[in-house]
Amino acid sequence: MNCKKVRMRLSAFQDGELGLQPARQLKQHLENCAPCRAELEALNQVVDSMKCMSPIAVEPAFPALIMSALQARPQRGFRLLPSLAYTLALLMIFVSGFLLEMSANGQPPSAPQPVMTFSTVLTESRNLGLLAVQDSTLELFSGGLHEN
Image (cartoon, rainbow, N blue to C red; front, side, top):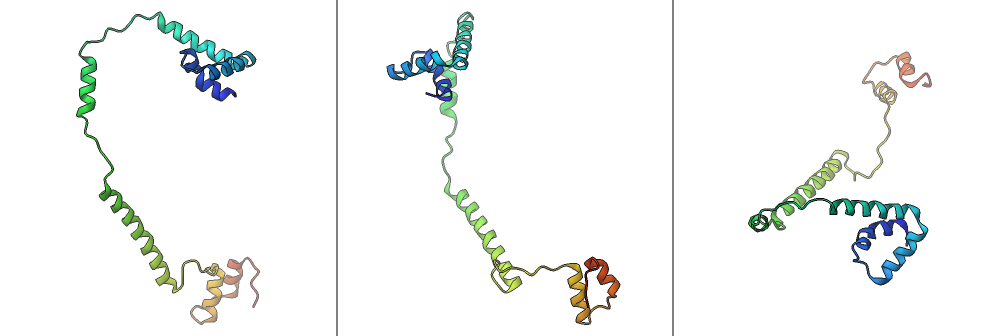
């Protein structure tokens, strides 16, 4: 038995709720493990200090008040309509995004897009005659690596 399992079962061991075999395994672990023994001692101190406390006076009608409040609370079950509406809304958003991407590119969205840099745009625009771009401007944006 490892320390994690022992620590989870210490309270049940302390209350005598463990079966014979699990209690025997736990005792054996406690004989060999000082940190788990210290944990059990701390639990024993808490229980002993609780035993010394005086009982709290409870109004006789208090349990009945609690039970009536629990029974009066409305039960909310699974509601199909809101769940279905949210699911359909998310599906519509996904499908519309897919269709917009396809209509913008004319191809499925998984097609790779070409990498465009500012210097590439300037060069293409100049080659098409759309812009009058100086070579020095192209060198500035391409890092001085532009070749004619």
